[in-house]
Amino acid sequence: MTCQEIYPAPDEEGMRLDKFLSEKLNFSRNRVQKFIKEGAVLVNGFKKNKKYSVSQGDKILCDSLSRKEKTAVLDADICYIHKEDTFVVVDKPYGIVVHPAPGLDEYTLYDILKEKYRYVQTVHRLDRNTSGVIIVAVDRKAARNLKSQFKQGKVKKTYLAIVGGRVKADAGELDLPLKRSNKNPTKMEVSWVKSRSSVTRFRVVDRVSDFSLLELYPLSGRTHQIRVHLSYSGHPVLGDDKYGGGYAGYACRHLLHAWRISFFHPEKKGRVNYCSAPPPDFIKKIRKLGFENVDYI
Image 1 (cartoon, rainbow, N blue to C red):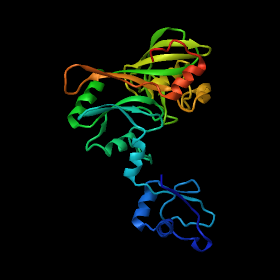
Image 2 (cartoon, rainbow, N blue to C red):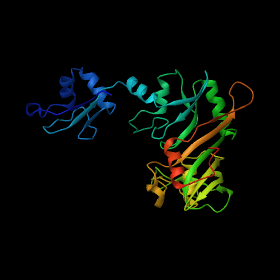
Image 3 (tube, helix red, strand yellow):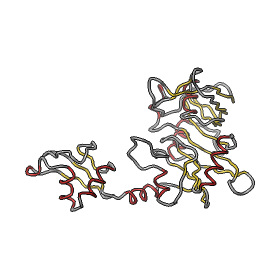
Image 4 (tube, rainbow, N blue to C red):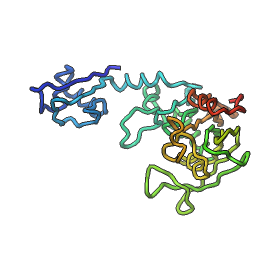
């Protein structure tokens, strides 16, 4: 990765950031301004605009990879479970956002696929730190078909989660309506006022000490649904810094994995099924905590 560390000299103090970098890197001013706009330039660890006046002692990092080069680097981390002309099934690593959003200055799964396909539509989402299987349409007709299947409840999803506490019931259903939090718009909360219905079924795979391993089957697709349902029930996902309570520090990310997905093929007859094996950090935590009834995972 082409990342340069640059320090202004005393006689360069007060220069505009774009002019300073243009001279230092021997790039056009327009190209440097593009780097700055894309967030590829950091001054003392922070983004600055092109008019920022540099000072002696500033530490300026410039990652001068092009957008296409950056998405190619990220693409190397993406595993394609299945590819067709109309849709792809991706094994999403945790840490990657699925789709661009206002204020989000990073490359997403959508950006990566957009370098490969003329048309891309993410017909459903996974949270940044949720790993696992996700369908992406690369054809308009397939996108309409798949979105309709999600709306009609024809898509069946199974997740795995390591949660805090020993879940007493061997299986059950969490029927808890959700709405966006008034206090924190980045969070969802259980509410019976101005909310939307939300149902998650679960089965306990194993229990050990003060932890449980669950299979989860969301019947609806609300934002953060599984994480909020589990937290509200007193069994938050390990590592969940937003809803994890006392279990937030048990892992470097929330240990929720989209394990299996089943849907009707957009063009052919019949249902298709795809699976994503849990990633190494998930398996490592299963072994460390001592879960035993996990041979089939």
